[in-house]
Image 1 (tube, rainbow, N blue to C red):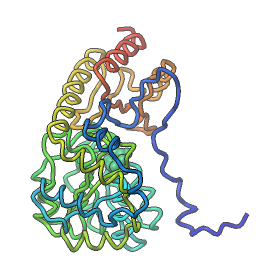
Image 2: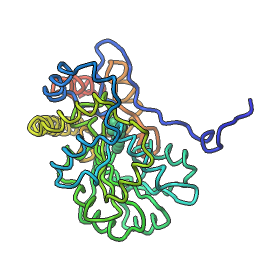
Image 3: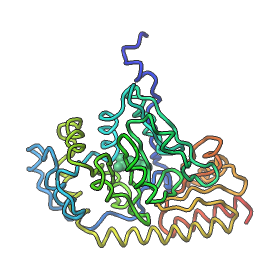
Image 4: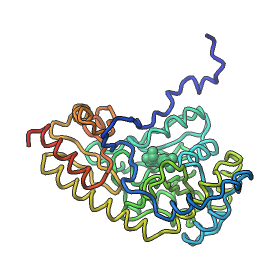
Length: 352
Ligand code: PMP
């Protein structure tokens, strides 16, 4: 049949999210969800929500939520835009800053959605290859990215889990002639972040999500911080009511519970350190992680085989085929019990 799609759309593979299987007794460690429930305040908001309110449209600009986030970050409402997950923020960003004559530069490997969004725009992609040994950034990153209009730095990076020197990031913000977008989906599990660059520089956007540290992947909420002119431009590109009323209320409750967030992240980080140490005892190579997952290469460096063997035992992790990434699997940090089960199965696979 003749295609009526734009050629850019025909050329897209379409983003394939991690699988969400419905097997019984599944240990699901493939999409970096939080093993703990969201703040109890979220339950209270849901229980007390008056359904009659849904008659009305939600706040189109999510002003109340933005004010509360701005208050905690010490910025203004005009510095913030909220989205239906940080994927929504990324979609607006690509619409705004990429086109056939406005290339994207991003790391490789990184979050694969960027490549699909670039195709949607018909925008060329400059892939900045990370060192295959330790996934560090090349020295000449700025030279490689020079022709790009948008540079996405995923920090900490996914699926590798490592981060990059913060002062180097500041230098990149200062020197790059274009928008620097820090995707900080995992920053709450990291040692530091680049949030202050969002107001220090005119050309910087920093995005965050409620899907990981706030345990609200099912809600779909994210936000970005930047210069008011940049944020105003993104607002032109958002769906008219991109955040429903309940999401805005739940997000506010979760965001306000700072103590709960901190405790939850500390627990995940402690479990991460445990899994890291135990996998190394079995002979794995583990990339130092600042996220809620580990990128780990089994003793035989065959990630695909390990992925399949775990799957036979109803443990689902994420495997990224490829010459470098194919040596590894990405394992989401679950509860200590889930990690012990994973470790028992892993020891049996490798005869340890
Ligand atoms: N950025 C990165 C690096 C991610 O790994 C993810 C999760 N898949 C996202 C953004 C999107 O998260 P969400 O849309 O759930 O906020």
